[in-house]
Image (cartoon, rainbow, N blue to C red; front, side, top):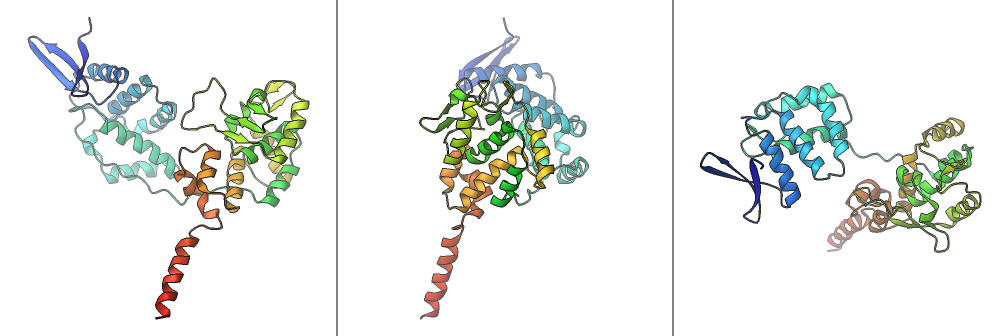
Length: 330
């Protein structure tokens, strides 16, 4: 028999255990049975530790999230691996802005990377069981720079395309710019996901569960359709991007070679940004662009691409102009 049980309590769950004749009960933060049991196990494992260090809190948080199937758990594990040498034995009550800024200075990484690592620590401390951490300080985060989108102009794209030699790399390049897909989706794309009759590509395969990096159904543009027809007639495997009957696992070398030949630097991800910027420059609504890019809503899309729209903030400046003119005519 386990030394504790998980029971319904106040609309949620609680861990319950006995010490002699005394019955103890502690509310859990989880709202479903599976998560509550995972949280209770971690709480029980560390029940005799008076105060957790940052490392204890983060390790418990990561273990709990792993058991509950967190989609981006590996990314957070990698972040903690980088942060642990500095933070592992730190008492949470000792954390202040000066300590955090010292860490950021030592790491010498991009602000977004430092923010991920520090946000993980802050989240872990806030989610630690009651009474296990000495403090839950508000952790300072380095400001993010203005987002920069690396994209190609129309002329640059054609120059880069001319530098491509391998047919599979050319097809990948056309797919990338016309579908706005992430590299993994294109390298995993199979012909059964491509409907040439209806001119649609279902980017998400049947055996893949949609996650934060959503793969939508996208239309096939005329120029891409011609490329796909040729590739379909010459196919030697089930994969759309293939060479000699084998799936292409990594396209980076082909891009490096094309960059050297053409004098235009591009990466596989550049294509996604390039197509999105072109669409924004043509006045495509951010809501439609978000759907094509697999964003859950258009806030991320607006953050990166709205400024490329010809109508960006034009209503605002127009309203200011009208107000000025109205005042001047009085």
